[in-house]
Amino acid sequence: MDTNTGTLARVVTNGVAEVGLVVRDLDVTRAFYRDVIGLEVIARSGNAARLGAGGVPILDLAHRPDALPDDPREAGLFHTAFLMPSRAALADWLAHATERRIPLDGASDHGVSEAIYLSDPEGNGIEVYADRPRDRWTWEGDQIRMSTERLDLDALLADRSGRPWTGAPADARIGHVHLRVGDIAAATRFWTETVGLDVVRAGNGAVFLSTGRYHHHVACNVWNSRGAGRRNPDRAGLSYVAMHATGERDAIEDPWGTRIAFQSAS
Image (tube, rainbow, N blue to C red; front, side, top):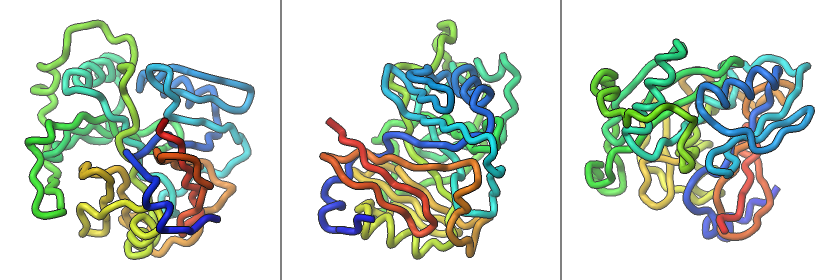
């Protein structure tokens, strides 16, 4: 495991590139991310599939039918957040989900963004969101102001483009990943000292971190997993998080055994 913090901090850039999941039923899960989230299947084999948008892979599914179900009390994935490029694109996705009668877990106005929450067939959390313009974000020094208010879904739907849904836009990406961890202080040290992100908000059992003054590329919480140790490798759920980087870098592990990889941004 590479822990050269000084070098690593200089190469991390621009957030999350890809998320890897171990799934118990590859066919069902792949179909969900294709048909519900709107990702395209970029590559597939008997035991794996990569999905993305505009030809760019952002989600890697590995099939392990004998894996234990994920346990929300352990360290792992809280949600993967798919960033739509505009409010109209988010509204189009919401109209698509409503037409398909997809169950939603919630919807929130965070001030910096508008977000809709749901889960995949194996219980992995998902956020589909769109950012508000950056000139409407409020910074208090190096801390971003975020809130959690009720999202007006009717007002959002009124902004849909009117075009038929044909899948996620080509420039949809993973905007951030939210992790379950066992200890906020340890998570903060790892993501700041080892990976090189900046804390942009903390409190209430969570920490939010980013690079380039984004509202967050990574979040960690202990809401259900306080005190959790290393993740059971026999469970389905989060396999790895890949971060954009300038140049090649060896993968490392966080304190709970989650693999953090680095993909060249070139």
